[in-house]
Image 1 (cartoon, rainbow, N blue to C red):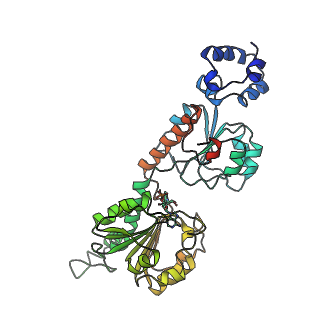
Image 2 (tube, rainbow, N blue to C red):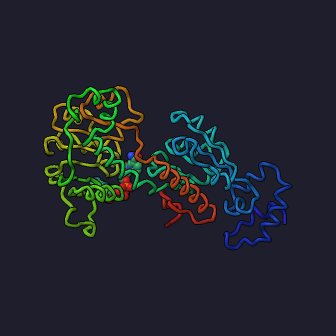
Image 3 (cartoon, rainbow, N blue to C red):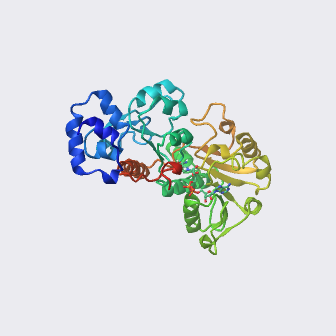
Length: 382
Ligand SMILES: NC(=O)c1ccc[n+]([C@@H]2O[C@H](COP(=O)([O-])OP(=O)(O)OC[C@H]3O[C@@H](n4cnc5c(N)ncnc54)[C@H](O)[C@@H]3O)[C@@H](O)[C@H]2O)c1
């Protein structure tokens, strides 16, 4: 059987036998590069990767934030010929296309994979997103080519919930500030046995309103209740089983009216963009604390700045802003009592390791013919 037979006589994976693969392996040695490529495009990836006929080319376009050096890429290396770029310029489609080249598996975190990229990189068979959000990938363009786009649906729930409370505790105690003040000699020279520069806040008995009661929202609620807080939850879908004596659903107006602390944990959708604005803030308690480690555009930043500077909002803890990295002219940089961190809630090593493990298993599952975590489900029909 010549190689041409292999190409023209394409069968379902389940019909391919080990002896077919052996014949294929022998024949492959006789082929030109172009012929090999033709086969790559026509036989199931599982066969040519698993059986070692080809090394699959895998490109990670922007691996640095996921693995700045404290994790290992070995899991992906085991699956093929791996190239990892720390960063790829997001606005340079030409460079993105060049770096993908003839790779079959492409991983991206924030590097856009546009229709133009899919058109130019005809060898792509799999896209892995090193994050939960996959808006950087043109899924329609991927689907049109039958390419599954696989994301990491949940890897950092506990870390992000913990971070929400970390933002809140910083606002309640200003630990960083007071530690710095001690180092600067202010305690040593203090006429009293203690001092504090901000009002300190006890949380027990206060109410936390959580907008978006999914995985992270529920995780935050558990910790808030452990601190003695009551929780009001708002979600587009209710699950009454999550309610208890200290946690119940409320509509948005009640949540705004009753909450001492409001935490945003809903996704960014057209109907949630800008939901924290002048009007919604007016419905809130004076001195309310607003926390956002979901997505920056949920908040109209100019309105929050005004409310912080007037004292209507007591403090804000934000891990996300409208444009990231933050721009120098972001109004929140001019706001009082506004704590901004550089989108790090997801990033403890434990979460990133989990993310890495799931990214590897996503590619493995695809190679085994049963892709998981596929966001463009029309490709798999599941
Ligand atoms: N800062 C970080 O590092 C970081 C990391 C991971 C996730 N996130 C953000 O956290 C968000 C929540 O993540 P998750 O894992 O809890 O997601 P999830 O899907 O489990 O929960 C989201 C919840 O929001 C609800 N929702 C949808 N539309 C809504 C609306 N219009 N109003 C109110 N609720 C609505 C959903 O029903 C769901 O219960 C993500 O969308 C992401 O933006 C941030």
